[in-house]
Length: 635
Image (cartoon, rainbow, N blue to C red; front, side, top):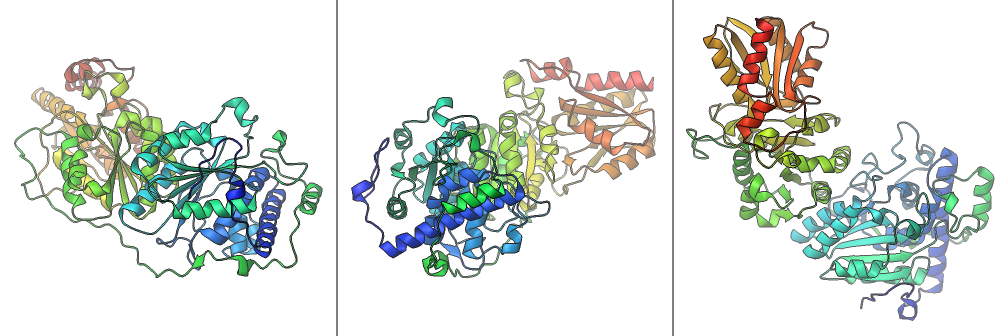
């Protein structure tokens, strides 16, 4: 039976009391974990000890008695998973790992030092961490993605997410809660550490989160509210969560920040303040640990799962001409949808998350073919990205789709996903002013700059159906974060069906021995560059046209060699993007120190509604604008 309780009502008399010796062991171990958390932060001189103390009873029972961990491999894919969404409680996690035997005492002394796996907030440098946390509000979404994969695949695994009560100010938490309820993700457990203090003030004086029980219930969760320091209630509520079926389970645990240390408990000014050595010693005096504590006997969470071999996605599909009509103009988004559907049938590791525009991005073609590997997240792009990170954390290749413009609001989630080493592919359609009448709010104008800034990212901008099709294959095969932008309008096919498009490459589409200058373009406006080159050729000015489909890694050496070979007073770049962060800047970086001038043609103002061809002309990124600039420079 699950007790759904409100306000300050607790499980109380409904709780089966723990056996006295077990309870004493539990209390001693919780206090030992608290001591370790305090010691870590005192030694480093920084950190958040009081947020660790409030959640210590909850997490001690979970990690030693409830969750199923592999005895030797915290990353084992069949073990239960945990996410410290309140990442500043990292010392608590490290203390748990230490007492479970996964960390050595010497490593505990490296907390927050350069080169240490024990960073200020959890990262994947530490085994068992499925995603980097600390940017608040994202952990529950990640948990939804992981738990939904496990549920659909019939795997007996649970996902536990620890949240702070200040953290639930974040709207993404409620996007995740709403989606979890809709999906009935009943192997997901959210633990809200309701310690009532956040950084600057008491939580409810900033944003009143109550009634928390009613909110989670309204979103389709089973909810239990407990006193998070009542050891009997803690044990009981996790047993209830384990037996829960049909709904995600939320534990709202009323706690005190700094509990049970008298000079810390409930003290606002102690948030994020490490104790001095003498304060640490005083705190230890209020955290008794019995001499008879037997951690090994108390621990029942460790199991021995069968070893599994990790397999990578490798798709070698080559087009045979049946995929499309090469005589017709095609949109890049259509090529992506076709490739995704076809290649999704070649690997069951391919999963897709969407944000209510799959009929525009054409990812609906995958959704219709493989509904069991498709998660519709609704109009909630930040949540969608983090759900995708969760899907990827289960060993899948996760593709997230929306208008490229809407991914700009989720840049934090995208960056955190890349930081988490997620095998996440973000595919944004409706790029630049070429989308036309819908206007600036729908146009991705700064996306390349955002995505190129991420360390290790792959950023692609194909120019036709064939290149989009094959670059979809490339991102599926690439292990790591990729971003690909696809355009809305139809454009002619530029390449034969046996062309290859390696990540980090480019294509020379037009060249002659009489070339006077080079133009580097990407995406939709590659076709404008070709038009301009044809017009200029009739006037005796030959251009070498490069399709820079890989914006990162950028083929810098190849483009530099071409530019030096052709010579001329300048190199021209053309892009349907703002002037910062895209093709123009990539070429500038490639030619740094060469003395070659770069003439950038890009959008330099907020665009408006209009026909695509009119907007390309108005903002100076069409063939006519390029012809004019080349003539001005070359004379």
